[in-house]
Image (cartoon, rainbow, N blue to C red; front, side):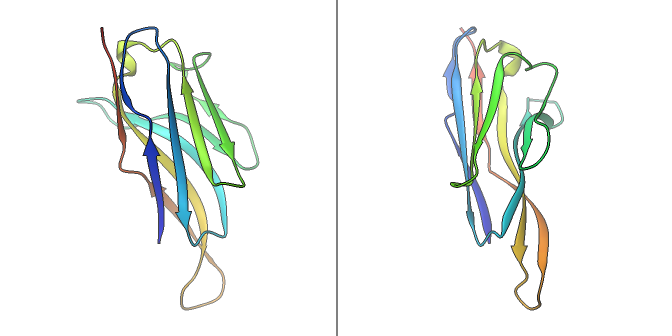
Length: 125
């Protein structure tokens, strides 16, 4: 079993900052990607930022220059620093991880996508 758990959501005024954290746990061989997605009321889930272990970081155009993603590979954590928040950033934010886990009944590894339960970010005055 692999789990990712988010923390750090809450209510913030427009222009303010918030920091989201996420930790992956379980029997993990390696983590290929960690990142953040969000879903606003009445809208589909969308990418916010992803950070592969090898490769380029990706940001949604709407958050470039305001949000920063970072990872601690030794701790299997990912953080999203959100600055200059706007009301349109209001959403449930989900942590995402793409991991390799050992197969239980055979050799080799399985490639899994794991999602957190989400943390609500509300930007309002």
